[in-house]
Image (cartoon, rainbow, N blue to C red; front, side):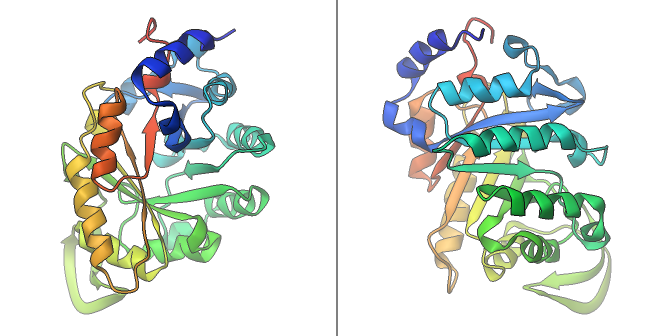
Length: 287
């Protein structure tokens, strides 16, 4: 039995009740367990103690707290190991059975390119059709170039695609691309030995692909209890999106290090609409 009644009391002391509707409960999966993520040091992640690494128990815990939005990251798939397919299907089924579940956001390490024809893509396509409230992340951490964004849109549709902008200590994280320079949705003729893309490259490509969901995470702040490190990034991305022609009102998700409603308000003032939490929702006696 999880100490949910204690956490409910803690939750009310940290956050306003109306804020909970915009919270997204985070479940990080590794080797079949729900792990407690701390500062992006994935090789050091351990099963979440209070639920003994049981991802279903963690999900039920969030539901009892009133959370109806969920973010599930398969760290094995993200690092190109075998995905936790059975567990993902089980969690998605539980979420789908919740009458007022708003959304389930999955990160399975989308890469695009040749990988867009992989079995992982078939899994995403299958689950996207099966679970109507699922959304799928294409993150800068795993993609090699912005053209991969439209490839995900081809699989799940723009309304289910999310651009993930990954940072570490404020620096955008991404794979280095070997090939032609990307600009907008086109590759320029000149060859580059290696290229890194900036925020505008990703934002423009996502906007052109019809994406309106953006998820910002600074790995250094995840599980740190030091407050969010993405306030400035959210403000910058929100301003950039509003300045693009034909852009619609974006949905911006962020989190990492959130401790209280003050952190939520700081992100909200920067244009953030949804807030990812894990550690702050765990029993305080444990973490």
